[in-house]
Each structure stands twice: as C-alpha cells, then as structure tokens.
Length: 311
Ligand code: FBP
Image (cartoon, protein in one colour):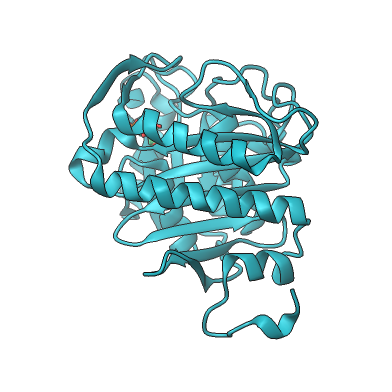
C-alpha cells in the first residue's frame, strides 16, 4: 500500500495500521477482522431485542441475548480470519480452539456493561491480542495489541499495537476513520470513576480514598460501563478509575484477562498507569481465565496516591 493512497481527511484504520503503526500484515488483518465484528455488534445493539438468554456465564452472571449474540459474532470473525489459534471470552468457560498453528491468541469481553443495554447507555467490547498459542500463564505486558469499541452515540474504536493509542470513528458508509492520534494522559486527575462502591461498607481504606476525592472536590464521572468510563479518561486526557475489593467481590468485580489486561496495556501506552494496588496489572500472570483483580487505572500520580492509601 503506497503512502500516496492517503486521502488526508480520511485516514482509514487499514492505512493507519500499515503506515503509522507499521503493524505486521497478519496483525493488521486480524485487527481489521475484529473491527468488522464490532460493526455487526453495533448493528445488533441498535436493532435486536435485549432481554435474557436464559443462560448464565462461568462468573454466574445472567447472560443477555446480546451477550451470547455478540460473543458469537466475535467467534465467527476470529474463525474466518484464520489467524487465531485460540481465544478466551468472558462468556465462555474454557479456551476455544480455532485454527491450529495460527499466529495469535485473543482474549475479549464481547459486551462489557451489557446490563446497561436496556437503559440505552453506552457499552463496549474489549479485546487483547497475544502472539502464540496460549493464554494461561501469560501476562498482559506480553500483549502485542489491545483495542476496545465504544457503542455510544457514535461507534468509536481505540487501539494500540505499542506505538501510541489512536481513536477511530465509524462513518456513515461503515468504515472506521481516524479521529485522534496519540491519545495521552496527564499525571494528575481532576475526574474520578469509583466502581464497586458496595465495597466501602467493608473496606475502610477504599472508603477513605473516595472521601479524599470528595474532600478535594474532584469531579465524579461514572456510568457503570468500564469501556465508557476509561474512554472518558483517554478522551479528557486525565482521570482515575477504580474497582476495588470488598465483601461481595473480594478482588473487585473486573477480570484480569479480558477487561483489566487490555486496558492496562492501552492506558500505559497513553502515559498513564494501571495497578492492582501493589503491582502493575501488566505484570500479573493469568493463572485462571476468569480471575478477578482489583484495578486502579488512569493518571499516574493519582494511581500512586490511591495505591499508597490502600497499603
Ligand atoms: P459486565 O461485563 O458483566 O457487564 O460487568 C462489568 C461491568 O459492567 C463494568 O463494565 C463496570 O465497570 C462494572 O461492571 C460496574 O461495577 P459496579 O456495579 O460495581 O459499579
């Protein structure tokens, strides 16, 4: 693809992956296939009925029809790519084998925040990509790419392959077009997004952290969807998101492999920080596909401030 292909007011995801990220062809094609899956998920959110599927996932959460449908859409596109040897999904108990000897393994939450579908809130998909044929035993720092899609008033896709974080908007003809490059995060936060607040009844240190934000009169921004709330940090260039343990969720509500790991990769690529309170999320080994982890993520100085209070 020669560089004179660019129509500079319309930089496509394909062009950006080739010329700006200089991604390997297989990785570029895989990310493009994932972006196609996201378009179908976006369409189904707009058009299909919500409601419960009647099933539950391994985490014991009732599955919405859209949870199952979006999981199947991603499976279809990963399978068609012929580039994925296996994947792990929040909606699947075990690793699913696809194309033997294919170069990548994928972890994803097909529809994060799905409990908000009936409220018409923005929700998203979260994807992490590893080279090789295994997921258990890996650490999020080993990812070769991470991306998310936000299904809001506009459908946006944000990715990194290790050369910065870049945002694309789905246009009227169904193509993701570059919106912003090199999203960055300042060291200090003015906004806070406190998840799992039910933990404050049993976690005094977390309670003190939240009280500190109130005392400093920081601005609360919380929707109940991790993709939306962390996109807010990337979009505004500052902020802090937490989901910390308490009685109901001792390790917090969010999963390491397909929620916290991909976001830790993206946020650290943008100059922020992601910790579980004692170590970088990027260095936590995936010992169980559905293991949960506390997460403190966003502006570096605020992450360090919160971690110091939690010790
Ligand atoms: P699902 O992936 O099952 O929807 O749950 C994840 C999530 O909705 C996150 O998107 C969000 O940050 C969190 O749960 C909300 O937790 P809480 O209910 O404690 O605010």
